[in-house]
Amino acid sequence: MKFAVKAWSNGSARAGVVQLGNFPHPIETPCLLLSTRKGLPFFISPDLLPSLPSPDSHLLQVCPLHFLEGLSPKTISNSGGLHQMLGLHDYGFAAVTRDSIQCLPEYNSTNKVGASFETPCGRLLIKPVEYMELISSMRPNIWATLADEVPTWVSDKRNRTSVDRTVRWLDDCIALSPAGGAVFGAIVGGSNVEERRRCAQEVAKRNVSGYWIGGFGLGESRDERPALLNTITDILPEEKPRLICGLGLPEEVLQGVASGIDLFDSVYIYHLTLGGFALTFPLNGVDENESDFQLSDNGSDRTKINLRATVYRKDTSPIVEGCSCYTCQNHTKAYINHLLNVHEMLAQTLIEIHNTHHYLGFFRAIREAIKTGNFEQFHRQFIEGRRNCVAVAAVHA
Image (cartoon, rainbow, N blue to C red; front, side, top):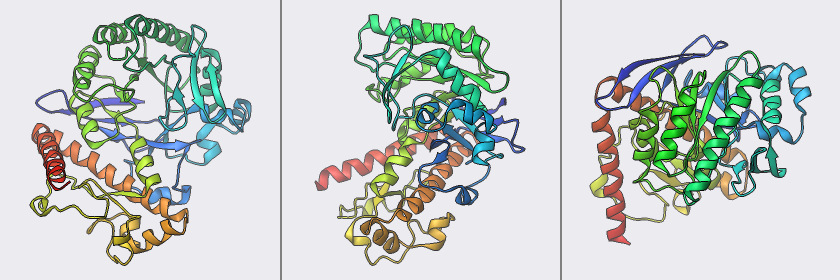
């Protein structure tokens, strides 16, 4: 893997490119990693993956713990790893233990031996040697080291312990690492700024290709997040990429980009799709019809619409006028509303295609704002637009 920063904003936001060995086209950053279940998006089948924007959609996030049920590491290895087994030769895989959907860190059961997770197989304790066996068999392009993630409310002592364990497991994983694959060192520390700084300093000393910033989305407030992120990114070398999990909302993504984060997970899209919500917010953050906003029963909050709402039962328009995704080009809100009402899985497939396409467009707009030197203005306008919508909703409530 190769990474290079191509443009900076007036602050810490940056645009770059990631070049994966098996993919001929570079992927621009900041970018979105598509969340998967055992290597494939939750609702999009392999034959529909090419309908998503390329190459933006060619970086997939996979959780190694998903494979603890079913195929053994030896079988995956004999199949040639994830690329061969899934037939996705032109896609990159980033392996991270936490996926924020089915494999969540369980800090109370984690000990000095290994990290504990709540998984579909129950609560499991994963040791570094077992984790590296999974990584060796899967052969991902990028993989993050094992980490002891803790929520924001733990004690300072527990935070120190999590940092000590994460750094020790980092050394263990590097010692056991196979040839090939870019190693991303894990950085934790909860909501303790000093422990975040200590962990970042220790990990920056190691020979890693990038950094995975863990422990976010576990109880910290939106106001305290920038200080934590800036503490970490100010220490890390500029020439290496940073990946983060737990920041999904558009406002949270903008916070991460403003602090210099390059890669984000897409769990937000999964939760929206599962609930029948479709993204509709303007990609430039400016809603020209904001003054006309009125509350209705369509489940809209100016970011998304609820396609289960009865108001869409006879609506023959696409989800977003002018959207070039497969769903908007071929289907209507009324059809998707019908599919949701009869519990047809095609509904989630069509919604996930649109939501992924729309969010990739959001990231593309962020990159353009950074390249033109307008990111701070873009960020401010987007947040102000969202705040105004919330204020109008409160007045009408």
